Image 1 (cartoon, rainbow, N blue to C red):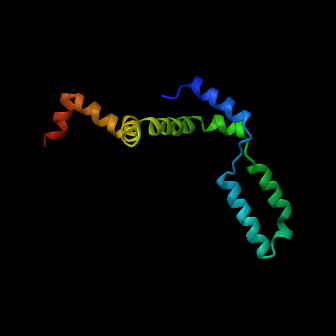
Image 2 (image 1 turned 120 degrees about the horizontal axis):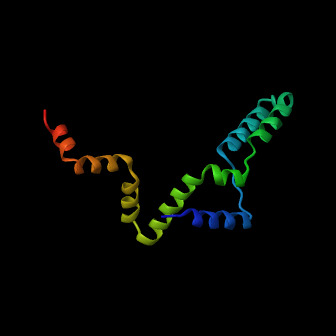
Image 3 (image 1 turned 30 degrees about the horizontal axis):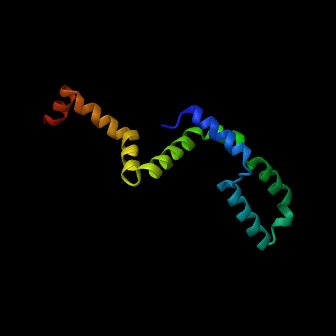
Length: 119
């Protein structure tokens, strides 16, 4: 539904915006730093925290490529939800579900279907 060309347009749009986010790793590190400060350990390990912060720093452009499939899936789901309300996301999800695809494949194969039903 959401083509690679659409995704490239989305990436260009995001790059033009002042969009930023915090990863879960960054959130957890910030919480750990706060705990270390509360427990008075921070001063002893401040340098290590800074090294870890630099290693965990996200790169928006890289993330847009690494998580391309997930982002495309989420955008497709949002588009379907917006234009087709509640039932369409369910239909879209079922269309992508590997178990549903396998069930349909078996239903189309009379031999395999009968073999499953035969004790």
